[in-house]
Length: 82
Image (cartoon, rainbow, N blue to C red; front, side):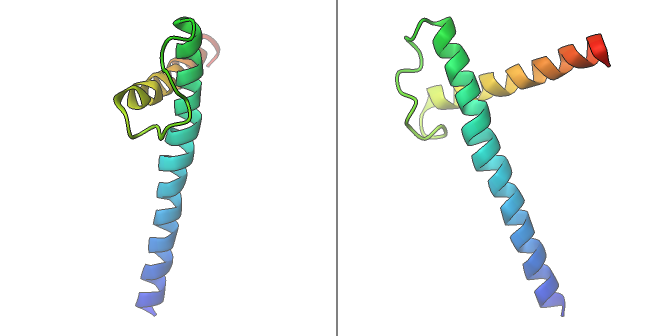
């Protein structure tokens, strides 16, 4: 019985890890950061948006930039409206 329970929890943990890693960081934060950064630099950075966000340094930068935009927006909302 413990083996079934442990494998079930392992599957849930892998699913949550996939949601956080691939969908949230690899899609939402990356494309938000890349599109805003592309608008701020008038299209010169990042060069390509179709690469894997975690394979090149500018992709990691765009992901962290997108994450900071969401955190900054949340902090702004919490200070002014919370």
